[in-house]
Length: 265
Image 1 (tube, rainbow, N blue to C red):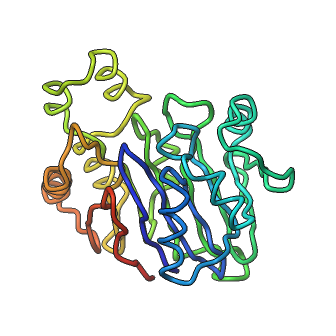
Image 2 (image 1 turned 90 degrees about the horizontal axis):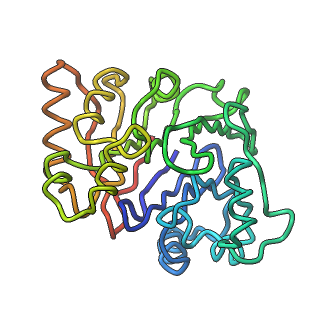
């Protein structure tokens, strides 16, 4: 399994995952040129699928471009596709490139199993994703990779989907005090802090304290440029983990504008 972040934050999100000989992109919220350049560094010239979490611009900006250039399929939930087709914000795609993924119904692609799960966010039908080897190729067990950003709070169902992940990409979006002191309009502040907005640093830490194991490699993602800093996110989450006597294999921050280090499990 190989994973790296291409970009992460309120200005754009894109992640690459290779698992069971399948090449996936999760979100494509930066330019197609930037995504293609990142992939070419590793001689990746094709994708088995682009998985979209939801329709907000910082998750889809380059999706249509990359799908056309690499002739890749785009997977999204039914209501997310309804939004795309209504607003035509992915450009022209072939009928075969439009792929629907239903939440809580595993999808097998080659030797990989992909599961979308519902998350609470102010979008049409937003989801997080779990990736793992399919049965017969690792027994459906480790390595399990889970991605959950843009969620206002963690439901019991989300916790179960994230539990025991070997690699977990989790939102740590904002510091509540920075958010309240900042320049956002009160309506936007309320949206970010709502239970359909974004996880704060402390909320991310408390979720990790509940579901992590000593084998979990954690990447904190989707940090706000206005209402957070990498050091503050890391320190807050680490403090919560330490306070609950929780150890993880590694805790790191996804970079906003540059590629992250390659993670191999």
